[in-house]
Length: 172
Image: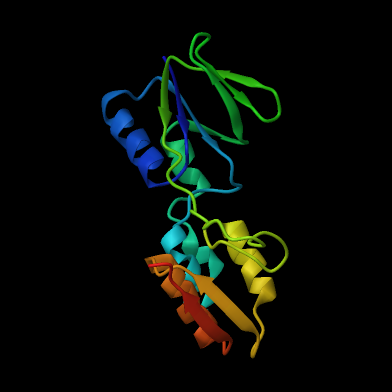
């Protein structure tokens, strides 16, 4: 059997581990749009605060995937063809499956505010976002954090710790 899991975070990894409890021989492929092994998004602000280093973000290493007998494809899924039972990658390659799990999680919900795109405007959702924000951080710079969810407030705290001038805006 060919199993494809789209997503390389907690849900996808938990599914892989549960599947392997019952089936150690089927081919499993994890498709992830991010580079590298799985990491914790919740720890990104702690890395910005310099409380941990970026190596401590990772919750799995490459040996884990090998131990679990899972191939990893780093690409974006652009189409799921349910009739042909295959996913099509951004690079154009099809990946056939017998069983498919879509475990891509959520994504940031940006409010509909004009001008909320472009240089100097970031979400803190991916490792790439954190790297972009890190390059922006400078003592004394002004930063506006939109939202009061856990990650937003942790990002605001990281900016305060890095001696930035922080304002937090909450719609509600």
